[in-house]
Length: 504
Image 1 (cartoon, helix red, strand yellow):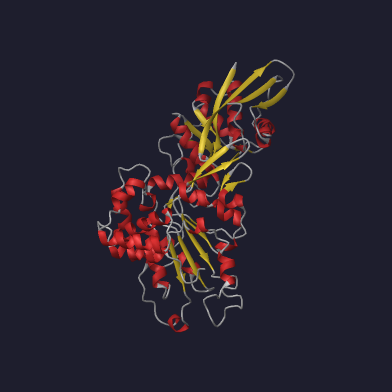
Image 2 (cartoon, rainbow, N blue to C red):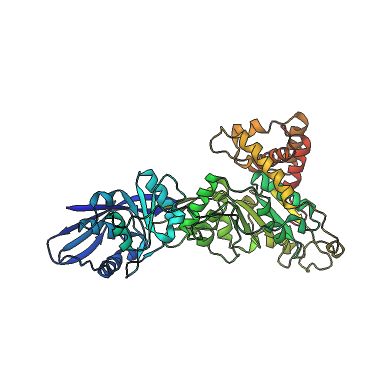
């Protein structure tokens, strides 16, 4: 007779159901696992054997075969320990077989039977709810999984507790969700003195999720401005928080099962590899672009990143998802992020300062910013030159708007966009609008259209650049509370689109 239990195998953020079949049959004593397991899954037989021995449960002198179905799906990770143990306990009639088939289990076993937390509890709970089953997981993963309210989550500290629960000796209470954290305190925009144009660009970028590039001399405040962006963004909606947390769960970034409503702010170093930025490596883990989903990806010293890494950003920026292709699988992750890039105007950083620029002007700047290809530069909606702040201005008291004031305008503009696109699938903000939807929301009057035509012809805007100007103009109009996109809105959008003086 074959007993069955269920678990999941992760392919990106998707948790695919896996049936764990256990057969105890006559023959030479053996314990084998089949079904395309990796090394960690194959080693589960030793951990399961030791855990059962710690509970004074001896395995019979028979042939034990564990099959992980579907057999052609790669099985990776130590979370297969618990479902293998559950299937084996059902085969030995220690727990009822119908109970073993009604749960989705995941967890790693210590040699003494203690359950060790594993990654992916949140997407596993989603899969369990979709299959109308409960979830069995380690106690440390219960708070994370319990956020899926449609699935009952049983969190046990040890395999002994699992047996006592399913045999009715000591029932366990369903796990409770972790706490909603507000995240770290955001830095206030009022601390930035001067840089009014850059602040305005931040507000527009936050309102429409537009990509933004800062170019300026070292110490002019590019990183300081970017660090204030999280304070301008509205909190994650319930759907966005769940999407983002599922990715973070697969990366083991959820602390104590808590979910944050603060939008992610990722800032990888320029020495990061392709796999770290885009995703990949063993098991095709999500990269920084996916960890920044629904948030901000800040790339300081942008031209210093490897050229291959920069060019790979082009497709995720356009589609909002990244496909990691491997020989045995293709894994897709969502990555709708706001890209904020910062760069010096040249290698030495002082191209625009006549007193400090090197003798290689202007070739120094052309060579340095030339590392950013034209197609990638074309994907930035806003480009801002960040000049150095005078020493005398640094001694003046802060007079700029506080982040809360700007955030209120950003939230109002996003609310307008939400209402505008509520019935349009695939569009949440102005940056997502394309084709007929973009034409409808950016209907220009004669003066504005004439201005845009002159700009497109004079500066040879690409079709992508043309449409990105329209999207930015629509966002500026939303910030002003205007139903129509006027000439002034379009002119401001164009001013941010044109190359800054610091660029070649």
